[in-house]
Length: 354
Image 1 (cartoon, rainbow, N blue to C red):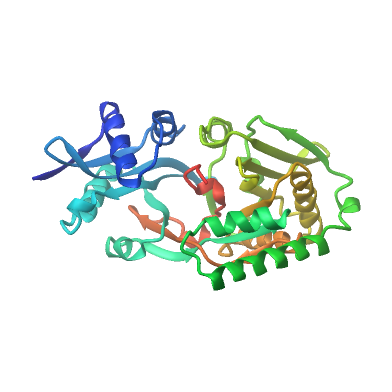
Image 2: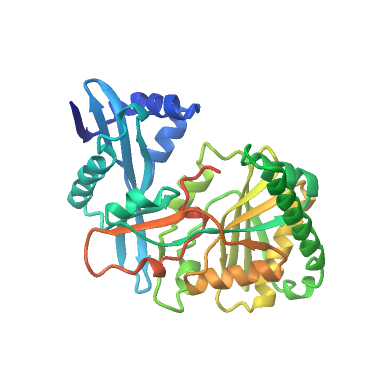
């Protein structure tokens, strides 16, 4: 008989072993504890399904604080680690785990659950909204290493698909070269400070809210946990641009062992015009390419004003936008919450691995 309960710290190794066995991966306990226990807003609400002493299903939410345009705090939970043992599928375990999780979230005053998934139908049946998908913006620095990496993401690519990927890389490389000049004068008044220390980004985020919106609160503790204490990251680059002592833009990248740079966060002050914003992005991109980066990848969205502003600046800086990705899911547990279309998003909302 399958039963459901909240996990404790004593269950962590068993949970991690279950995931590594099903996925064929080697997630360490350091990675597990960082993601699900050490978050600054509290350890995860983690539910396990058991058949006797055997774990057969898991799901959790990681508590994250959101702020709306008026500075109101919203306690949210990001859905993660959803998995059912293949031998137990067809027994409604997925739905029953979530039903248990919903009740526990209510007890812990979590007002909304959100996350990302490619498996949309099961979440829709549970009452989740899926208002949009994420997209990606790419800039190629080295043609063949970038092509080799993108092709490797899907071993089942056909020859036709590989040709399309090569064409994408060639087009991106030409666009980068076309947009490489003409930014120096635009960014001359800005002081660039490169650092590997977290800073509070909430002031810059709040300045972006020209329209009603909400965002993940990114104070010092959140930045330290999500970026700088992340055991999945080995090479983090942070570029903060100041003008007269005021933070005007912030770009944070993780560069993996393959020379791929993933933008964890990119923030532009709304007072910056399109050309200046693009100029700051070009300056950072040029630095990354000089350091040997083959490909720069951003998550991109177009559902809020700050997201559209960022997308326009990326395009003007030579990035190619691909409107394909996975679905964003959103389930309010209370009334009077912002719409998911008011949630400013970037890769900072991902689980912290590539």
